[in-house]
Image 1 (cartoon, one colour):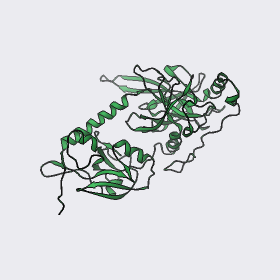
Image 2: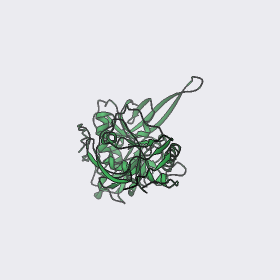
Image 3: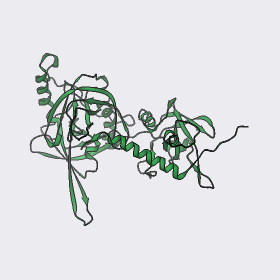
Image 4: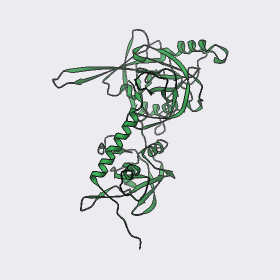
Length: 399
């Protein structure tokens, strides 16, 4: 008869490891200096985003590099937004303090939608946009996605119309390709810098610690205030959204990162239709086995994700996944450990996030588990979790 083994961890140990893992994730994210078909995959909105290159841009191969810079800037700088944010806080004495911030953005359609970074507008109570000249447009936040650091604003388009930044193809980029960045570094209106693509598929993280896949690295000078502005190719098409720099002192040292426009194409239609990105969720609070084992705790597997708790009404609960349980002595009894999903190993939370990012609401997946001393696989149908549902404790990440 097979002997059943209960692996136990104290509640204090679990919470300690979970809290520590959160600190490690934040530390990794802090290494980067952060500054202030378009069919929705899970919806039905069609957003008409421009892709065609204007005829007034000369073929770059037949003009000088200088002339190409001049033409791209002249044509598209009027479509680069100077975004000003205002936030209000109340101090201990009841006085209202006003905080100001700024960033950049790109006009993406004739209706006045502007794409920028989520971190540019995060926490702002008032938004305004300048498109050159003295006219200031009040702006409305349409939607934001902290996981990809993308947000969409909207202004009422003026009677004379808007300059639209066409979208390019970030999936066909090559290292060494020329790029141009237009933005508002340190509040300097519509500054042009140029460079090349220095690297592709760079791993960066949003402020909430989530990985952003496939970032574009460039040596074009990017500084605080460039956030949210376009990274353009030589035809003036937006191939990325300037978002981060790697800098010990906070200024440009030639290592900047842009979010690929391919992510924006996937996210923006949902932001415009729903105000958020509807992603499938596993519906469980999880912690990596590695983080527990590395601290000397005995577990039956060396890699995987420990199911701490399942969210009421979520995918995991409906499929019968089991979280941690407490026995009569106050010890925590191990429930399920997820080792793989659809054959993809789950070593850490980033593995799960990357996997779910490629799935749609309603997809069914096969979840491989270690349960009660044996391996098993169960089907799980992925659903969304209501935004109004209470969140689990802050030390636990929710997927």
